[in-house]
Structures are given as structure tokens and as C-alpha cells.
Image (cartoon, rainbow, N blue to C red; front, side, top):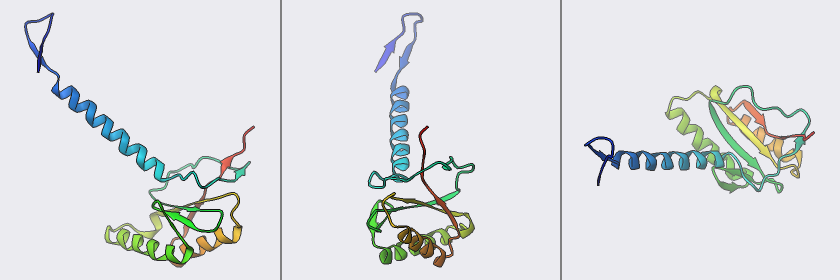
Length: 144
């Protein structure tokens, strides 16, 4: 619906402005959903005095959340370690199809503070068996 301007004898159409606002809402909704995929409230990260923000962001991140019971959350689904291998291999086949070299894939491991360290090492070993050699461990910074 055109709106008549007070200052000039012209009509303004506000439809493009509404479209722009709608597109911004959609964009921010998608961005927030992708950021939430990197975190899971079931995982309570350990605190470390050496924790630092990453200097360089990974180009092809693959986030694995290790729960206190040793199960792993990947792409929003919880798997036992034996099941996880199949899903990681499927993801790697997809990356290979997209011509992404394995050297660019960085595995981000977010292990619960109550998880046994052997479970985390099992996840690292699973990744190495799949030829994923770049690993990053997430912790929380110690509050001063």
C-alpha cells in the first residue's frame, strides 16, 4: 500500500523494507541455530587455567561432545562409540565427494568434566583410525 509523503508530492512503497526486515530475521535465526550446534548444555566443560581462545578458526570443524557416561553427541544425536564410527565415516565420505582434504578437517572435542579421560582418548583414537589428525579440546577459562 503506497504511503503519501508529507514533504514531496510522491508516493512511497514500503514493501521492499518489509522484505528486508523479513530476510534479516531469517538470516539471524539461521545463524543462531548453527551456533547452537557447536554447544550442548548436557556437557559441562572442565576449567583450565591454560584455556585460551583459538588463534585461528578451523576451516572444516567437526564437533564431538563427550558426555559423562562416555556416549558422544554428534550432529545433535547421541551415539555409543561403536555407532559413532559409522556416522563419522559417512561424513568423511561426503567431504571427500566435496573435494575437502582431510587435512583441513579439525575435530573439536568438548568433553564433560566428569567424563573419564580414557573415554576421551577412545574418541581421539576413533578419529585417528579415520585419518583425522587435527584435534582441538575445549575447556572453560578459569575465572579470576
